[in-house]
Length: 74
Image 1 (cartoon, rainbow, N blue to C red):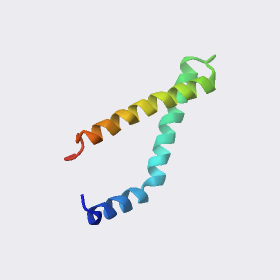
Image 2 (cartoon, rainbow, N blue to C red):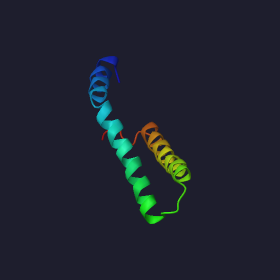
Image 3 (cartoon, one colour):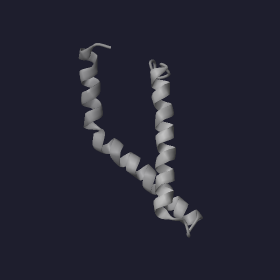
Image 4 (cartoon, helix red, strand yellow):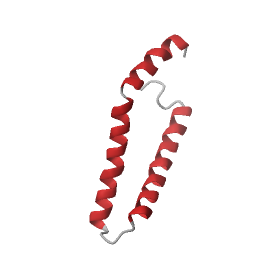
């Protein structure tokens, strides 16, 4: 992909950076609330660490998919 093609992509994604960050935070906070509802006595820090680990594992899988070309013609 040429740098000419990347500039519009970078510009587009940068314009949505705050929205993407907010959606990620919402995903995290929603799952924290669900965990608290389902396991009221849960250690919130432990739950947060485990949730972050799950999210990171899934991000790593997505990275692998991108590198393997899964989204080249999305």
